[in-house]
Image (tube, rainbow, N blue to C red; front, side, top):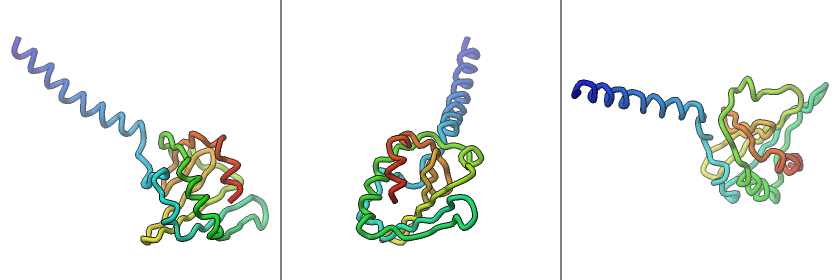
Length: 138
């Protein structure tokens, strides 16, 4: 009876950590920077670049200083879901990247689309339908 109890506890001690690791991997890694916690006043510059498709489709510009706070507030409203593989997230056609430069010297590249790129990872963009038009304005 004691041997059976010991085996059960051993199985539990092995299975529980394995399940925790699996759940963490399945959920994906959290973004390297929580967009909801970005203080718009700490954004020093926002560089926008991208490609519209076709010949001479590349573009780049800096978002004007008077629009930085509004852009930061927009980022605060983004809701990210699970992490997705890069192969699944990449699409053909138009793409737009924003590089945020912060007062403390940090920088962060983001790219809103069907999936939202934060740093080097892609996530489900849960409220993309709600915010898509607002990102297009920048």
